[in-house]
Length: 105
Image 1 (tube, one colour):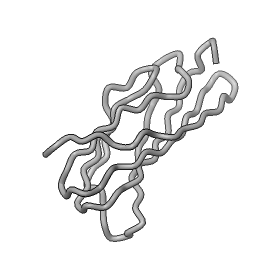
Image 2 (cartoon, rainbow, N blue to C red):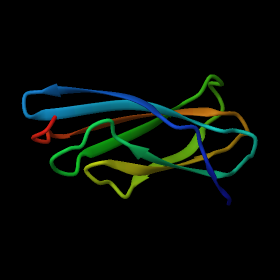
Image 3 (tube, rainbow, N blue to C red):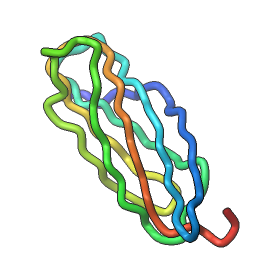
Image 4 (cartoon, rainbow, N blue to C red):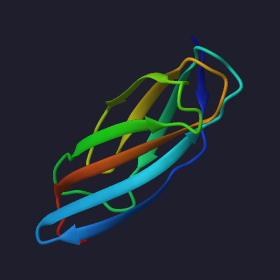
C-alpha cells in the first residue's frame, strides 16, 4: 500500500466554558484503489491537554466504502489520520476533537 498526501483540511472551532471543540473535513485524492491515504491535521487552535479525536468517512456513492479510518499521533496541536478505501473515488473525512481549552484561546 502506498501513502499519498491528501488535500488540506478546513476546520472551525468553538469554546464552550473550559472546553474547546474543533470540527473539520479533508478530502482524499482518489485515483487509486486499496491505498492508505495519510493526512497530518493541524487544529486551528491549541488544546491545553491532548483531545479526544473522532473521524468518519462520507461518500457520494452510498455503496462504496472506506474500509477503515484511524487516528494516531494525537497531540494538543493536531493528529494523523489514515484512511483505506476500496475504490478510486475521492472521499471526505470528517473529524471532531474535544478537549480542555488552552489558556490563550
